[in-house]
Length: 170
Image (cartoon, rainbow, N blue to C red; front, side):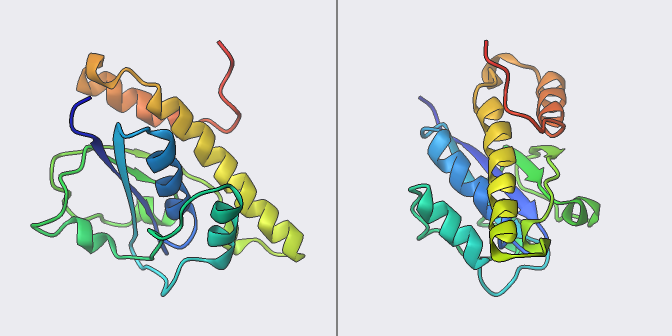
């Protein structure tokens, strides 16, 4: 296996969706990908339900911290291969210039931190966001990246952003 692909997931607060995606890709990518996350306007800390959910699913959460996307536009930042926005607000913001001319796509997911109601309903919103991201990332890691030209790859990752159900069985 060659050098892993560097993937950055963006949302506004970097406290829920982008952190979930970072955790999933780092585990499900089996070393082929190195995932990061950041936010346009990061919160002070990750949302506690994000950490609770990841721990309950057996993820190491020591990586989890809310950080600015400016860290990934700095001269010493990793060269990015893919950048995915996972919230509509971050997708609408003017993004920094990313090193490496990455393939970009919008994979919008409803903000679980905005859920209202009982605690169980709020936690369910986090589980639903996780499920949607897990499904999309499962499709992404199965793409034949090295055999697709850039335009085909861009189209495929954009299509993944429209998936809302579990991937079809072959």
